[in-house]
Image 1 (tube, rainbow, N blue to C red):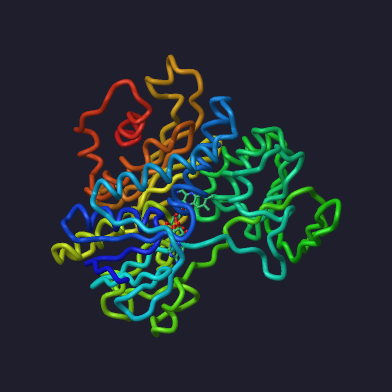
Image 2: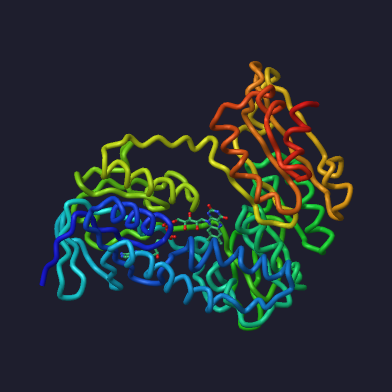
Length: 420
Ligand SMILES: Cc1cc2nc3c(=O)[nH]c(=O)nc-3n(C[C@H](O)[C@H](O)[C@H](O)COP(=O)(O)OP(=O)(O)OC[C@H]3O[C@@H](n4cnc5c(N)ncnc54)[C@H](O)[C@@H]3O)c2cc1C
């Protein structure tokens, strides 16, 4: 049996879901194939459930929400895809030629195929995932709160899990190869997160290399360049391997370092096959995957050129406290730039709201154009996307001074920083 579509999408994470939805809503006959859990790392097994757990911890509600969550995600995704007219298949498959993908005894033909198959956790070289060496997937579905855990990687993923487990009463050790946790973030942004983790007795070992893991019957020995550490559970973060659909390599698609190479319009070296999200190796973030998918949809529907500036992509660390923002940081700038910093506890909002630790900082260029905005504090996540709009619009300090804001809110601190 064979069925023809204008567009076939592989994978239902953020990249695949929004690709299929945009194409179908734009009037193209569209099908989607998922071979595992609907929603992928973005919605079902990684990013979103990690935030759900952190929210649960903050509001002291039940932590055992993830299987319900995966079920809800699966239902919601399939419902919305079907409502948009997308044909939905749940199956493993294989490329048979550049316009055909075989699932069971059915061949799906399509003029355009969008590969959005994302990535999977990968273990340390020489080790395998096991009951005691786990990835984020198992960490989010643990039935029992562990007594102690060692987290390999002080990246965003590792620090979000350190915040989560330490809040649950687990003794946490974070081992980071570089000299600072949350590499890529200014030290003053990271400082309040380190202090909070240390208040909760988290050991943070920087400039420390995990050399091997010895999986013994009763415990794990983590061998580092600074000595051995014993623990019950090791969570490996930050290591991913891309999920290439079967048969694609054999068609001759260009791949480098495990990623499918794409041009400016996300087209691979094989005409008519596109790749968006983690699989193209441009940026491993759900926010980027969603926008790549939306803009690819526009390109396929109307030829509109893709226009994405990742330098202003807003980012957040859902630690306690949180960090969010976009654009330049102090580590990136020369003396031609100015840094304006405003403490949140100096805002009008702080006069009657209890917790107000943290600050906002703005990086301004020589023409007074805002080039970076960063927050650290409780609920910083809510400001990151507004920061990106400020950056995208090349807002000046004078624009900021003459704009309208809700009073009294934390966000007014951006205005206060601007008029300093
Ligand atoms: C713990 C954790 C926290 C994160 N937090 C954030 C965050 O706060 N913000 C952020 O922006 N990003 C975050 N990320 C990263 C984000 O989850 C990924 O960048 C994003 O999910 C990538 O989307 P994707 O659609 O490309 O891939 P995925 O979400 O991985 O989805 C790919 C889908 O394709 C399916 N698939 C694979 N092979 C096939 C095949 N052959 N046929 C059919 N289907 C296939 C998979 O089963 C999966 O459903 C986090 C990641 C992790 C692990």
